Structure formats: C-alpha cells, structure tokens
Image (cartoon, rainbow, N blue to C red; front, side, top):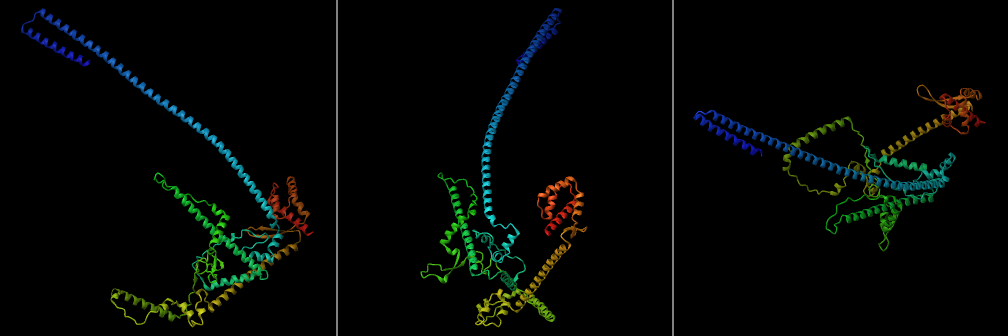
Length: 579
C-alpha cells in the first residue's frame, strides 16, 4: 500500500511540473494578463492544496498502517512470549511431576528397605542367638572336657615333682619321640609325624667327614648317658617302635588320602566347568566364566582322608611299604615280605638324607720349604710365558698333524681314575684282599690324623663341661652361704633387693625389733589407712609381691611406708614359721 501511494505522488508531481512548464512557455511567449496570472496562481494553489491534502491523507494512512503493524508485532511478540511461558510452565509441570514420582519411588524404596532391614535384623538376631547358643554349648563342652581332664592336672609343686622327677617318667618323656606321662595314651598318634620337616644347612663352610662322625659320636654318647637299659627292656622298645611305625603309617595313609581327594575334587570341578562352557542347542558358545576356587573342607575332614587312604592301601600296598623282592611267593603274584615303611623324604635321595649332604675336604698342610716355594713360583712364571708364546701361533696349529699312537685307549681306566685323595687312599691296597677298604665311600674314610682330632675335640668338650659344672657348684655354694647368713641373723631378718645410686642391685638384710618397729610404722599412718589395712586382714598374702599388691588398695601410702609394712609383714611371717 505504501509503495502504491509513493508511485501516485511521483506521477502527480510530474504532471504538475509539465503543466507548469507548458503554461509558463505560453505566458513567456506573450505577456500574461492579470487575470491569467490570477488564474494560474489559483490553479497552482488548488493543485498545491490537492497535493498537500493527498500527502496528509497518505501520512495519515502511513501512521495508521504503522500503528496497525506495531499492534500486530506487539500481539505476535505477546503471543510468542505467552507461548514460551506456557512451554516453560509445561516443562516445569512435567519436571515437578517427575520429581513427585521420584520422591514417591524413593519413599517406597525407603519403606521397602526399612522392611527388609527389619527382616535382616530379625534374621541376624536369630543367627546371633543361635551362635550364642552354640558358643554356650561349646563352652559347656569345653568345661566338661576340662573337668574330665582336671584329674590329670599337675596343680601343685609336689605333683609336678612326682610326675616329672621319677626315672620312669624322665625316660618316657625325654628319651624317645611321642612320649607321654600323667595322662592316658593319646589317640591321635599321627599328628607328630604329619609335621616332620627338615632344613638344609646353607652355610658356606661345608662340614667335613670327621666333623660329621664327631656329631654322630656325640649323639651316641647322649643316648648312652640318658637312656636307661634297665627301663628300656625289649618289650618297651618293641612297643615304642610299633607305636612310631603305626603313627608313621597313619600319617602316610592320611597324606595319600588327601592327595586322592584333592585330585577327585579337581576332576569334578573340571567336568562341571566343561559342561557349563560347552556349546548349547543353538550352536552358540556361552560367555566363558572362570573356574571357582575349590573348597577347603577336604583338608579338614581327617576321617574322609583316612578312609580314602585305606582304600589306596588295600589296592596298592607298595605305595606305603618296601617289599623284599627275593622273598616272593611260589605263584609269583605276591610282592614279597614287607621290610619297612616307605619314607617319602629320604627314599628319593641317594644318600638317604632329606637334602644332599655336602662333605667338605680339608686342605693339605703346606710342608714345603722356602726354597721349594720360590722354585715353584719360578716354574709357574716360566710356564705362563711358554703358554703365551704358544698362543701367538694358534692360527697355524690346525695345520699340524697328530702323530698316531699304537697304544689303545683304556676307557675303564680313564673312567675310574680318581683324584689325588682317591690315589692316596688306594695306594698300597690289594684289590682282592682289601676290596672293602677300596669300596669305602669318601665320607667314611679316616686316618690317624682324623682319630687324633676327634680325641682332642672330645677332651676339649669334656674340660669345658667340667668348668661349667664347677661354676654351677660355686653358684649353689654361694646361695647356700646366703641362706646360712639369713639363718645366722635370726628369724627377724628380712631380705630385700635394693638399687644403689649407680643403678646396681644388691641384697639388704634388715632386722626388726618386733613391737617397737611395728609401733613406729603405725604412728606414721592415719586412722583411715589403719582401718583400710585392717580390712585387708582377710586376704592371704605369702610373697612380697602379693603384700605390695594388697597394700596398693590403701590410699595415701608412700613408697617408704609400703616397703616398711612389707618388711614388717615378712618378718612376722618368718617368726610364725620359726615358732
């Protein structure tokens, strides 16, 4: 509309301008009259007024259209803002609904969890009550076993001395493994042999053959000095050997049963794992899962292990016994006579020991003179120089040909050729008459020097033990002299251990004068302290520590007062014993 109005104004302006030019040209051609000029002026004014009216109307129209456009824009903006507000409120409403739903769901979850927690508390309380009941039952069983066992307890020094000081008890407890005294024979006699262990000596100094034999001699001397042949007669030795053999056999049976059960458990777990991971009916392999850890209940079931081991013993006794192959039956089916039990620790070793024994060799004493030593050093230098000269021509050594020899090689002699020690041992021995000496192992070869060394070592140990015994006797004598000193001072003497200003302990003997000392001590106490001490009269105290612990209940006592009261109490006790 605005474009049409602007086009109309441009055309109107052109029309007025053209008419004006035409009239002016006509007027210029002839001098216009007054009326003509008036007419022209009126026409111009009319046209000008018409133009102004048209422009005013157009401006009004423009103003109306701008106002309408502004109202339209404001309405559109208000509608847009209202739409956005409505959408925002809708989103807020949806959010509030979602928050309410979440709150309701959380509240429901909380209620469900509270109900589950109450159930868990009830179940836990039931389990706790059952556990406490089991604990009470276990305590009652323990108390019952302790009551049954209490008849064998050694509760007094006299009972301990009677049970452990007798010759029979000493022999039974300290002579052989698995001994017992003062109680019935234990049923589980395999526990000791289940935990047999050995440690390989990894010291850098190897034990020599004579040191090894020295230990064996000391062990034999220990057995000879501690074992009483009058006590260990044939019947007791046979009974103890049978007990040890039975214990070892039970340990072997239990060990084989444990191995068999663990292998069966592994095979069962492998079969179950293979079934779970096998291809299904849809020909699709399942998601692989790790094999679970095996249960350790097998290791705690001793009865099952022994039953399984007993089955293996019946099927294959050779796993437990060593048979004499020369004593087979006529049918050839029997394994022969069992000689002994198998020892899985020592049978696998050639030396019959749990670990390889490394026997050290003593170096030979150097008996050379200084002249011989210098000569050997000179020969070694000359030999090293010759070797270096030969090494310079090693490239041409391959061209040299070895001269053939007619003497055949004695491989037996080379294979059995020993070192210097073997040659020195075999020197002067006849292969026929001295075959036993030639076949003697290295760790069992001894000469006069080894025997002399053993004798000297034994004499040194004897002298050291004698010195130790002298020191023990001297200590016992000093203790006897101290007792004699206490007896000489009288029954009113109390011995105490004190510490001087340098921190050294010493024995102090104090003599109490009875009533005077008691009154001097009591005068330093208050009425409350005296009453507290009188209340302690029902408690029995026999030693200084017990008296001190009892006096610690009395308030306000100093260390000097406590020590004085202790000395007084011990003095009174000694007087009572003397009377």
